[in-house]
Image 1 (cartoon, rainbow, N blue to C red):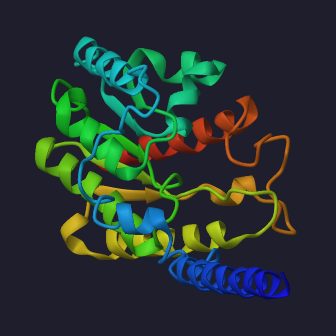
Image 2: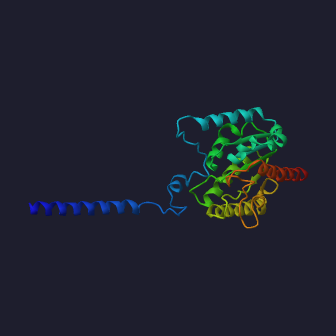
Image 3: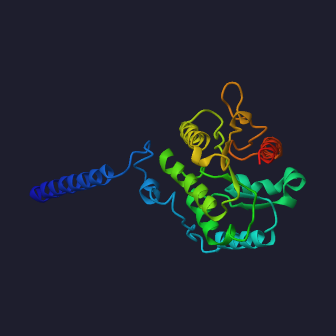
Length: 264
């Protein structure tokens, strides 16, 4: 009887050792939780930011495809409008506020879908949304949703959108909106945005090949307090603007468009 008990104990110890080894083999292969470059999203999306890719229908309701189809119809119906705004939720949500109805609706095609990354926006433009339009100016707000990829990859995605628009609509001027601060307090995503914005400005404000064609408009300072916070009364969720925030964007963009018109 004693020998049986000893055997059980030995077998139990061996099982525990095997499980311990297997566990550490698995965890050794997991990415660092604090790493941008080793995340699963990085591995899946590294080559996609600058290549048009549609969103997979994960929920099975076809919502994104339906929104894309609706925006394509909107683009066709608005083919005489002088402005096209393309991007993510910051573009899409503008339609919910008075500043859109008052300042943009009659002359702008809104091609925004919430949650879109650069590769999704590029795919939509490549697949029917840009083709029927005849814009004098295209405004781009893209990149804040490119989670899990580094600044360089996001920059490539934004530039791919710009390059496609320049190819398809060579007479249009392009205004790239610098990425806005996000999060109530300074954080690593803001640091990433600063790297992206600096690169875009260096590319489009100093390279003569982009002169009089591509511009960067940075209004991020309007959404920061003196101590570096994002004000709740402009961005209630510290990412999306409210009516007052869109009023600020409208003010700066309208003035910039007047400047562009005066330099034609």
